[in-house]
Image 1 (cartoon, rainbow, N blue to C red):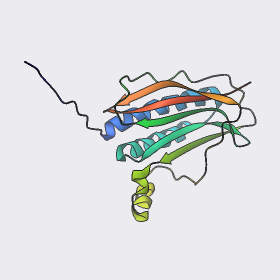
Image 2 (image 1 turned 135 degrees about the vertical axis):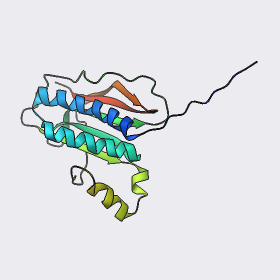
Image 3 (image 1 turned 30 degrees about the horizontal axis):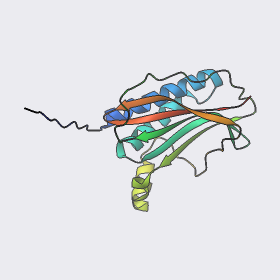
Image 4 (image 1 turned 60 degrees about the vertical axis):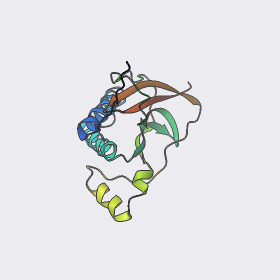
Length: 169
């Protein structure tokens, strides 16, 4: 006798907010160590991220510090909807003590093909519903440094894979 079962997940705004809260916790640590972003801005970023996740519009999310267009220290989150992630790590382990003097904080969000497939009016309507309005731009370049994959966040069958960039001393 054999048995089989099907496992399915329904991704909801609750799941999206769970994932966004992990990223927000990382941002709070970043703010504690380096001074930015503000608490109000973190709340806005978290809700914006939750909405992108909930609607299936996120490709990549990143924040950190840059100097002259080059990353100093940053955290990048890539979406994984394939089910490859099986654990939900605790937020944290944000690198402390990197010299970010004379650098600036940045936050970058890249939407995916599902968002691009929306009409211009639908895109504008979605963006207008968000708690902050972004300007168009490109993320900084890597410069001398390296990326490491260090955390995985999971909720409702979707996950975020966190990578940390650290410049060489």
